[in-house]
Length: 582
Image 1: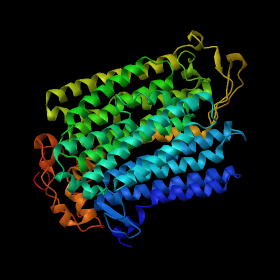
Image 2 (image 1 turned 135 degrees about the vertical axis):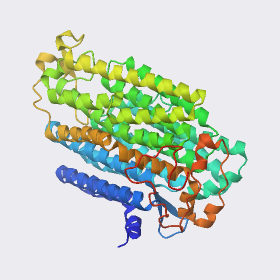
Image 3 (image 1 turned 90 degrees about the vertical axis):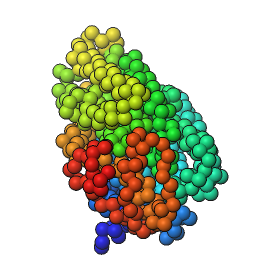
Image 4 (image 1 turned 45 degrees about the vertical axis):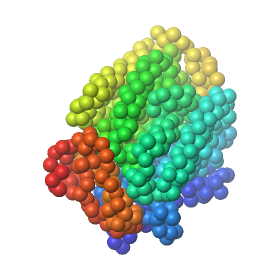
């Protein structure tokens, strides 16, 4: 089998595998052990497939598959490129780690009343929705992916139907439905203006739409994707919704779901609406998101809410990189997305372990954890320092890349973002060290409410009341699967640091693909359609579009001939000469 045939065979699997796995686990509702094993196998297979797509995408470039043999733009198009392949790999690694964590938690602390038979298939359906969003080659399929993950995430968020979870779930679903309606309106406006929803054909036809209409449609999509990504001022729903869910669900929500919105913004900004028409809006929103999130985090006493606010804050870094619209800015944003998914998920899993061992996630109750569990202290400290941007971790590398991109652009607004990013990084470090000091090193006797704890570890249901510390039964050691999966994600975060050079090179090649729209259009529709693309408007030195106009597309449906011109371990920088003289 040739590599081309292998890629076309592999592309649908990240969507199909979890869907089929969900159907199979539904039939195994009375066999929870088989359900768990099957779920882990499905996600492990998905991780392997995503890894293969990553290697093949870097070697062969963009590949498109027409589902059912219907040609684009009539049929459903799935597209694998460097960006979508990287997102799939990180997503599946996180999904697998969280599933193992949840299985370990259920085995040790669960009972027959836990809704495991609902959790397993719903979790797999959510994985399918995320994968579909990353591979979608048309707006409606992207919308379907969003709705699939919305429906499944609402079920996961309200497991057990306690009053707190139902309240948070209602808030979440109302905001998500508003986002979906705005997205649907954007799809309707786009179809009315262009007569198509295929992303490649839209890239060609939107250039013929009057500029005012084009900017208005882009603004509608930014509102829809901004709600999903929790960009300020559309982020207030997140800190009230995520912390109420069970620990593994909060972890995967925090790590992954907002990044689907960020991915959609990247795709819309680079493929459909190039030219930087709303770059300043994105930059201002990125700055406000960073500052709003981190000031909110500092004010929190609950560790889950604190990290929910830092999640919002660090979305601002990604919007910062996207708003710069340069190759280095996009590369930094993509690298930061990968880093943040892993680190934020790991931190929420650690918080779940803290809740289990100490009976609370409130700083008013926590203390003495370093002495009680040095392993837990190490599992917290490493991703916390990474999130805070301490050298040499991946958080530091990602932030430096974004700062370098901001300095390169050099506009007054870009300099303000650079300053805001530095301040946010310092305040993030303060917030995570505050947790470190109070929860791990302060004596629990000094905590204002240190004598109160949850009666027992919670699993999927929110049915645990508070008791006096002396009355709590011994919960024993941390379950091996919970510690192992958390440690694995912490290790992945360190690996992102060790391979930062090759990974930054990969993200720069991904950014080069994004900025060269002719490659994407030529792969999906053919070279004739790519030739119809007009020159993007806007200042070339700011958009970076002049850097990426020489690659030639291949025939529709197959991989394009953009095999990596940069060496896999290379570190090209924006403005530096490349192999084609850019």
